[in-house]
Amino acid sequence: MIETLKSDEIVNRLGGRFKLTALVQRRLKELIVDGARPLVDRDGRTDLELVIEEIRQGKIEPDFSETGYTP
Image (cartoon, rainbow, N blue to C red; front, side):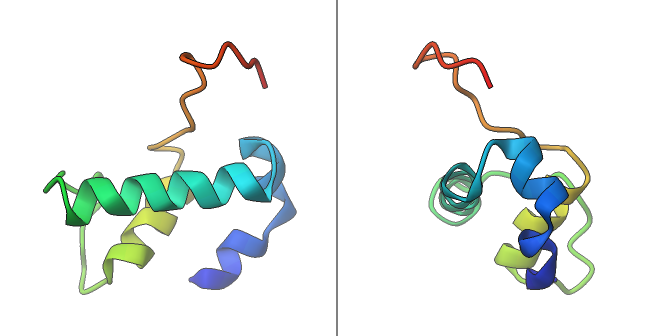
C-alpha cells in the first residue's frame, strides 16, 4: 500500500512529494485526533492505509484556497 505513494502519477497530481506528505499528515490528524469518519471502507486497514486509499481514489485533495496557490 505504501508503494502507491511512490507513484509519479499521484505525486504529480498533488503537486509534489511535500504536498502529498502534508496531505497525508493532515488527514491522519483528522482521523485520529478529530475523529473524522473514513471516506472508504476500513476492511481491516490501518489509518495510514485508509488515507492512502482515499488519496488513490481521489476522495481527498489538497486545499490551497487560503494560500491563493493555484496548482
